[in-house]
Image 1: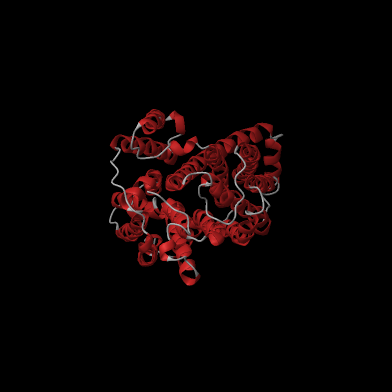
Image 2: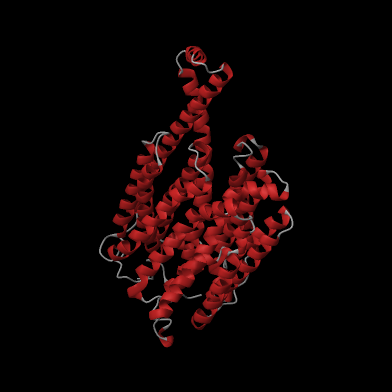
Length: 516
């Protein structure tokens, strides 16, 4: 499939403008938003699902894992699907399927049926992410492209952050089914208008052969990796034979997959785009940067809910500050991109993210809601400074026919990075809590004296022991949180140096990323 930039492939149809232009940008951005929202909306609903179906929380987490696995598998297949069936058709059918399976999720009579429907939902949602970006590249006029890209990136950032907020509000006030029902009319309406407006811009299709071996290897290694990351914490990671087996399967199938895809004449995933240095460096940076940022998105509400007494709703409100900052800075970044080296913008964003992590590093257990606002605002601004220029850098030197594949790889790497980072950050935080707790207990001076003084003050010995344990636990969590944010800040700082390995990107003129 050949994706032409706006102003060439659609010349016969006339340039998009006015209400139609705004509608196209919103349709594509909302399709991306729905697919990414479902990655995190059920995270806070696991207890509700376990109670509703009489299952254990570990079994209910497969509702999350099933969607993540399916989406991660279908994202890199987007280039092949778009070439075979047409990008607009795949996008519209993805939205229709998303609405149908959202309804079936809400109607699911058992947990197994719900998990099966969530897998189907992920299959439908996965292509929406890269295709929305690809269609923006094709359709939006050059002078409006940076603004359109900013809107798209905004939904990429807001959706995972708002997922727990919306899920928490539904869990606290409604039945869990409404986490799926409300998306039914949205996806069907967006799909209807997408077809009415975008059908005339459909690209020619190619009858490409199916790479069954590559598809099987992709499904195996991505599925094994996602299941390992989704269940590693509960299974005690590599002390579990099941997790070790999944790791071995992931490594072997990944190696074989890469060898097969680079040698096959018609690969299911086109890896030749990684020969481009600018693209490869951008992929390394997005993997590290988005991984760290998503780690912050996961860790902050987890810390607030488990240790600071926040409800899921109020933890979501803290996360919402990130979205507010992203909305505010998006227009500014669109103006800066044609004037400033994209590598410099990304580096500034990485240093801002590192600074935000260091602000959390200095917190204690007395930090209040408004003090948490400032690092969240800084993180939100940093996210946009990193994401938008990186999206242009990643495909700015690719030929037009490779942009769909490049967009698919970009979003695939970002999806895997977020899954890996979420598991790694939570595991490190939990282990560090135990380590810091043991160090605090070992360093406690004369604990018996403290207990005796509490008892002399009228507090029972049992209550005094409980109080001392809670104090030690609270401090160990706070120390672990500080140590985790320190590591995340260091990773962000190191990533800023990697950006400069990329060749200097062409100065953005406001156009979408196209070949030069």
